[in-house]
Length: 253
Image (cartoon, rainbow, N blue to C red; front, top):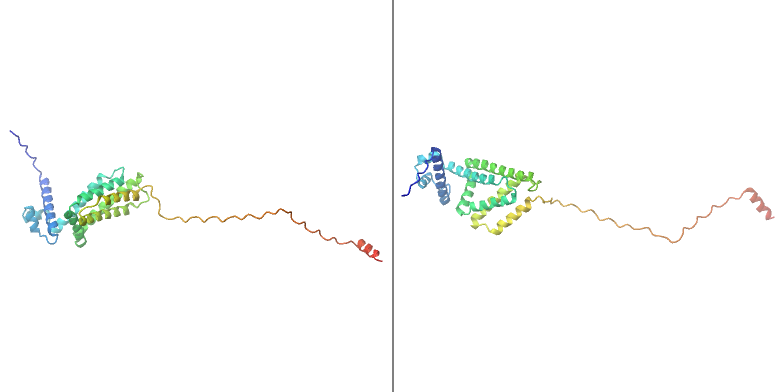
């Protein structure tokens, strides 16, 4: 006779967390199908199988649901980032993060939902504030990771870590959006991205400032050589004395 194992009862906090997750999943399903503004709270309640009172106990409005989705999205990203913080091979870790994002948004609907959340943040101040806070924490965490790698001599110390973190984040977001349109990220593009990261972050990177070459030395023209001795200077004329003058005059008489 098989013995059934009784499930460990959940605490009130665990049950509340699970209800919250269920509501977000159901809302996400509705948003993927109809978009934020075309989805009503009643549709979310129907999808999750709860009454309006139960749903409003966790989220006061549809905006609150969207904001929570944005916050959960970046929380997962920060958790992933923390797993690679102490890596010995930063370019390889960034490559792994890139592929994790690609896998996370492999479904067109997931990539579209992420894009729509960010677009909503530009129109909705409440959602925008949540996204801005989450983005700041993400970029700061990534910049700290880059600085740690710089201190260890793993990447170019001349890089501006904060700006590099912003650029990397923008590139990852671009890959997700591109994937939503092409349905996949070609392996060749992923390999190119990896190669670009290694070249960009390499400690062997040198300044792209061109150094003006020194002018070529002018040829030295040797002085001509002469085989003859210089002519002797003419002797200075001797002024005759008075006695010599008198003697010359007497010889003429």
